[in-house]
Length: 243
Image 1 (cartoon, rainbow, N blue to C red):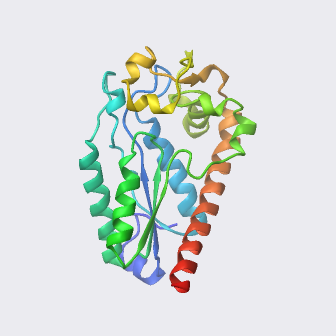
Image 2 (cartoon, helix red, strand yellow):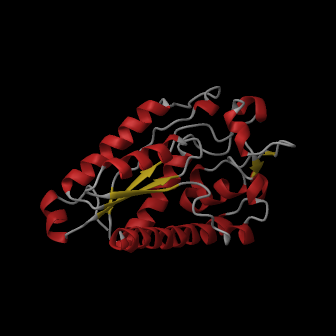
């Protein structure tokens, strides 16, 4: 794995052509998880991927679009347009430096603008390709074996709490709230602020979380993401050659 502890000559000698850009968020996750939950998850997953595929790991971007959580103290957010420009500048810089493949590892579901940015970069640039990994893409069916109610576990619930227990148990609180709003699914984040969906800011069942679940889930997530990265870039290359 390569990171910002390395020097520029290190990267040149290593002929590194793939970069990993983790993107998290700073936002509320109820009273039991820290504001930096998404950021720390992005960092842990990004490190696992970069380590196993020998990529250049960039520092995880902590700030993104968290408008849905703006009513909760400590949440900070970038406008969609600002986030788009930041990602576009970073990826363009990597392409210019000679990196042919860039992977954005996004752990925050609210960063919907990233898909548009990725499409724009791939249609406007010929010197590299960027792909996006974001919650639900790719789907990881294995996780349903660990978290049977994963489809109703959208924020600060069993999955995220378990993951954070595996990452750093010392910063996870003991008090847990369970709340699954009846008759609502993920698109309600587009319609309502989180504070009107859940008073505590949780959407899921954090009481079911355990460190053991997180320790099982994290390597699965990393493995499936790596498979997706290899498969996607391979498919892109095949299409280019056929064209």
